Image (cartoon, rainbow, N blue to C red; front, top):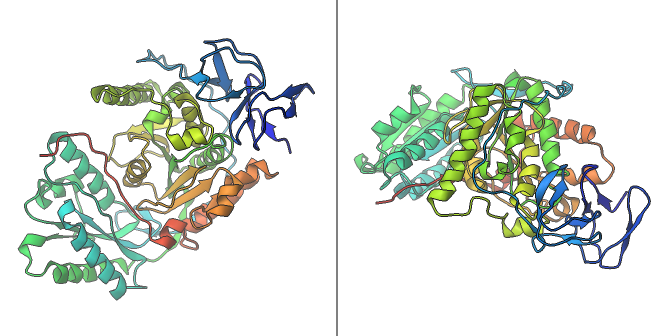
Length: 497
């Protein structure tokens, strides 16, 4: 196997698949010998063709930035000599691309899920405790811990998701918190939900009920802590009722088309756009070809690759909503006096990603080649099958929470650096490289680095597809579930009193 890879015939860079030292020689596709003038870390870029100062440098067949100086073959290309080519707002035109042939239908097209009374399908039979305000995080945590001890084996688990908001928030900021929490309340992985309020917060239970919408009183119970003599005792009694309700549900065969996958990357490296992200895109296409749903978010990490998604819009109306999604997020940066095209995080740079457009071109590959069918606002639930774009930032916890609230049963989280966290739903950590998968077995659920070790994309797609249906059926659990890592974070953009 080669020690480097070129992703497109037009690229002037090759990606190092091992660490190189200055003076080493690599053999290019045409047999030419190239001596490296710099040390090049694994996952980073080696220049193979000369690039003039100010000229585009191509990777994936697209520009990943402009050369800051004249670049000569053998050079290590990174932040010291490559800068972003992105500037300001752009004018977009709808230029629909020819749809790629649908992915081959998978052999296995069902899983064992829980069909809820309203027709929704869940993959876990949990009890969730959602608090309207951060003041009662500890109360909810105690109730969840005691309830888990009391009801072990009767349901999959009783879980509380701590957050600091719900009080002293004003206007749209409060509405966003309510909408996000309400979407979690309505998630079908929760067989039943206990909503706990304090009593004096802005997010009053009565107004929160409006955000939840129509609900089954057998499935959702409410408690105002200030009105209870012993809120722990009352909370546990309500959980008992919810557990009895949840016990009526049993797993049954449902089509894979009912599955919703959230797509997310974090702690990326130079291999993310070569292994894990394309693999997730292949699985996403397969699910969509079976009638299912995939949800792509991290809007700032679409900057520089947004036209690829725009030209895959189902129609001009969806195209216009993608334009608004991108431009509204750019305006959010401007409103806070921040650079729109800020470079990737320190971890991304250390892994070999030099510019935002390079990060974005790798990030958007998680969406595969499917048509974009809908654009969904932050905190709202996805209701159309196919590939959906969801409004949320790149922050790992915030975006995974938004994907969960949007209805994702499982989140596929690709990473080259690793992270232990998980969201409210099973969070499948997919490593971009085998070294990470071997070193952090308690974090990583699947190794996409196998693509560089002789396994084909089709084989890994089959393997990951089967793993996901096993997870959906409850036959196996993700590391975040096993380790008890279930967290939420809410996007905040407003005044606190």
